[in-house]
Image (cartoon, rainbow, N blue to C red; front, side):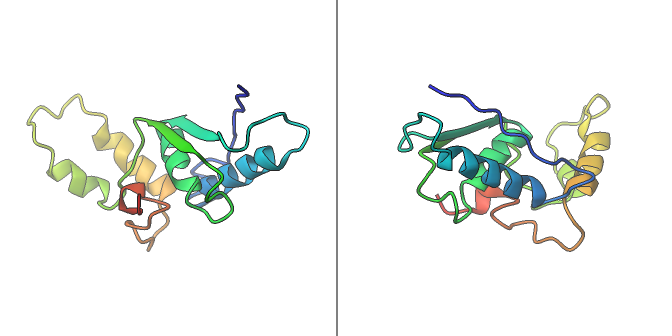
Length: 131
């Protein structure tokens, strides 16, 4: 097994879709590298949180379709369709004082999602992508 850590440009300096495109480009470079002894029929992308979302979205790009066997995502952010204030209003519990979403949510949203972006785009919100 070969494990490769893929790096990407991050928000707020680089908003969506930069990170998705970066991961796809690096993954494609690894797959195409003839000096690596890899089984190209068993390539998996995996990640935690933002990395999990990137594993789910980058493999949707044409240059990786059919080249990725699986995506393993730990706690991915899969739905950016609602802005943070809308998500906050729909929380089912009443104890919100200790919840970091009230401050982190708007900051992450501002840093990552460009103004006017279709929030249900499959590369942003992979829960809207075809299986």
